[in-house]
Image (cartoon, rainbow, N blue to C red; front, top):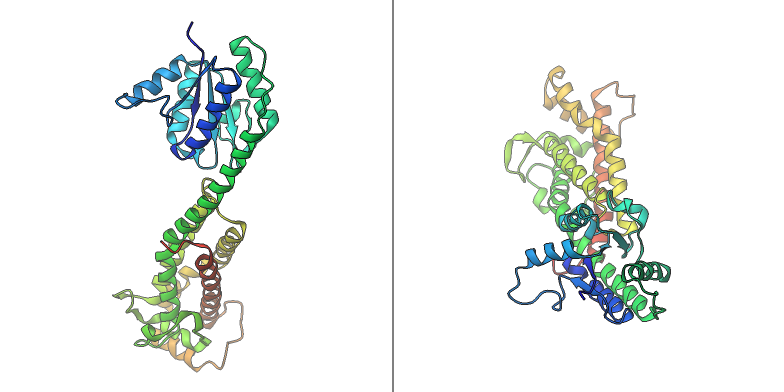
Length: 342
């Protein structure tokens, strides 16, 4: 008599959990059921055409368990295997772990009755389901050691993922952060001096922002002025920050999220300023006249509700201060928490 088969759908990185579940089920049910785990040598042998073996196992199984984590649910293979089981009308049980809850499951996985893998009650319900398939009583197994193993895996995985995802954020935003730093320095430093400035200790006054009208020597494009590069780099940085914050598969500490959200809020507050120069310049006698007015100003000009050009320049000056402060806060966190290997 052929033993019933249970198929465990998982990503490669979570093969350790899948193998542990396989061992727990097979031992608890006295090996009266086969548990297929593609990453386990007992399920796939050398020389097997793995894609056909997996397809056949899904076609012939009586139950599919899907291991769901913040990382696995974004992988197409998990959704493919779930879809294949659904087509076969095979019962599907999503088991969540590593911080993912049932309520966070995407559709269609959310439509299936699932549970938390580190819950003794969930394991009991899983055993009841398997027992109904085998038409036998549910074993009263001691799952304490299994739950300890799951908790250890989750702790280890979270620590590893945390470092990896912080490094990912660092790599993704690194180019735009450096460009933003260059823009701030060039906007507030005499034309031939930017390379000698240390960003972290750089201080500037309102009169210094006249330099934003110069061509960007650091960017190497004499046809575009510094302020144009600033708004371009800020827009690109904003898009990537929003992408990170909208990616549920990324494990990002709350403190870093708070820092990233503060940038989104700040940029949203001054995003409208990006077009003011191109709008005003045709009505101004010359850029030199603006630069002259900025340079002659005694400290920060009195704000007059955007009734003159200097009001918009004051906006730009305040943006420089906020962006410098934000970059220093962001880099301090990243340098303290990211891996030194990146």
